Amino acid sequence: MKPSMSQIRPLTQLEVMTEATIVRLKLDAQEQTRLTQLGLYCGATVKVLQSARNAPLLLAVGDSRIGVNYQTAQKIYVV
Image 1 (tube, helix red, strand yellow):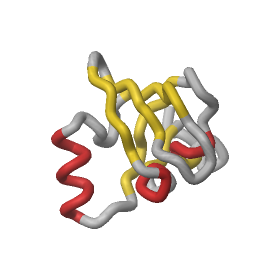
Image 2 (image 1 turned 90 degrees about the horizontal axis):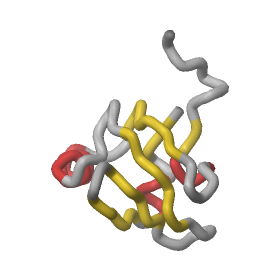
Image 3 (image 1 turned 30 degrees about the vertical axis):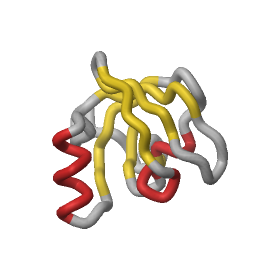
Image 4 (image 1 turned 135 degrees about the vertical axis):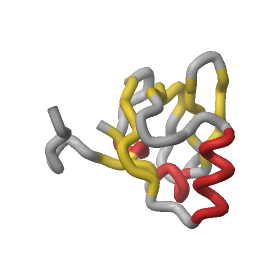
């Protein structure tokens, strides 16, 4: 089943310890390539471990932990 537009939201709107699947990256090509190499790509499952308004997010991606700045996280969309 395809996710509805009402379910898609920026990564910054997830609560701590919530898992979601990445469905869209609205980033420039260089930034998208860098994040893809770290495991953040469409279809990847991520869990928010730490989050605060306008502060970097700490994410769990598989067995890895990745820090993503708030502005970048606002451009990563999940369901």
